[in-house]
Image (tube, rainbow, N blue to C red; front, top):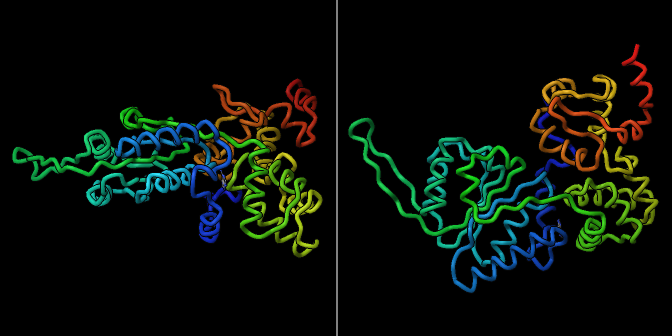
Length: 340
Ligand code: ADE
């Protein structure tokens, strides 16, 4: 069976609840993504001054970086409701129309995984976003009539891990488009200390930085690791998270000092051992690893690309020297194999 989830970044239902409690509620509490936060502050203040709804916003980037959190914060800052849905949940035009026709002026309509929205549904979105109207079609053939139904002026916030898959008409209808990037260690350590305070756990500077170093640049991962380390600290130490406690707990979790987990290492090893370091096509990798191509592209690869363990070429993915070193595989071995 092909695995759909990926243990490091996928949300479990229990986590969803805990994440909500750790989530910042206001822009002033939000750590990192400084330029995006500044843009949003200005856009929100201007919209409030003009007493107008915000423009439509598109957030793009790997999972766990705060796209959903930002949408909720924007609704809080604007003092509006937020209605949430997702691309795969909007199966039929009717699903979307039902939501749109109940919007009140200023409401935020959040669509997660907007790149997965079916084409027929997407076409209803164009006039909804541009003219705040939807066109109903009655009857068929020569008797077909359309009726334009006016909507309240709402703000669509779309989140995607694959902006490149959005059609250009949809992409062009967003007034603000921003790419969220991985967080640096300093910001992640701040997030970890803030979360530790909320879950009433003592952590020192060394402990926070150790978790930050291994969190794949991702707040969701950081918060997840924090909870694993908290358990470990309570059982194996005196409850305080220090650097040593974090190192021991995360080594036990199979997370190495670059933040790579079993699946990351398996991917690097597959490229190096099974495909002689690459280049290897994504489909072949996905089949060998028994993982969905989308999971590889959207969840696993971005961090490995960012940290330089792999590169993408027109022929496929290649492991870098850094990957060989990390897995303690001699790069010369590969050259000899190719020679003979
Ligand atoms: N928790 C998760 N992401 C966060 C962020 N960017 N700032 C503060 N707390 C967070």
